[in-house]
View (spheres, rainbow, N blue to C red):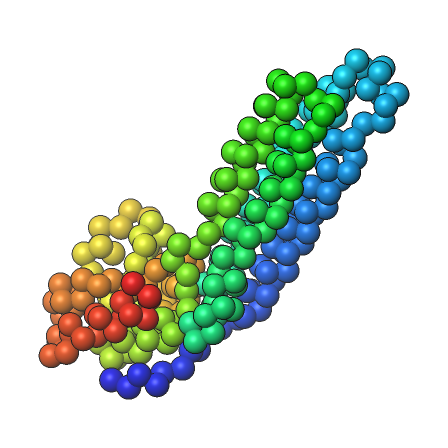
Amino acid sequence: MSKSSTFVPAPGAQDKAKTKRIIALALWAVAIILEIIAIVWLLKPPFEELVEHQGFPQWRWWTLMGFIGVIGIMTVIGSLLWKQANHLDPASRKEPVKFFIQNQLGAFIALLAFLPLIAMIFLNKDMDSKQKGIAGSAAVIVGLVAVVLGIDFTPMSQEQMAVESQVVTQLVGQDLVWWSDGGGVVHLCQEASDIARAKTTVSSGPVSEALGQGKKGITLELEQELKECGLPSPANLAEIEQWVRTARGV
């Protein structure tokens, strides 16, 4: 098997990825703008307002809590869309800096959207200790959730897509796999036991399409699955499995 395979995205994958990235960037931009508004306006009431309300106004505090929630929602949705785009049109591991930044950008944006806000909440001298504690804790919790959901723990690469497509073509005779909505990997035929037992929708198509939908790759139980599919098992099957693992970076 040649290791000089090249990445071929699924039909329309790049256009879909571009759309998702544009929406993600727009959501992130709104989240950052809301953070700036919260810092420069909500957290800085004029002296007259402080005197009138005998402290930090409740309406500002409740609005701040709402901003924290909205910023978190927009950040997370943006991160999920960004990760989907990276599975449709991935970066190459040959460019490690770009690969890392592109795949973990959602986590960085979440930090940018919450760290300054958290700092300004705890440094605020107008809120009482209860207001500050609740708002600060909420920002920390929502921020941590946004960061974790922004991390791509199984980033896709061009090399993985190319390798897995080539492996399937060698084993099956064509770039065609099967997967279920509830499964994490793809399979070599419709008769595979995991597909036969699937209780969710089953789909088929090229490897790139399956990986673009978030599947982590072909099953590594290849010996068992080849038997279930009535396909011959190549002598270098162990080497093929290791090649797939290496392409996935595991």
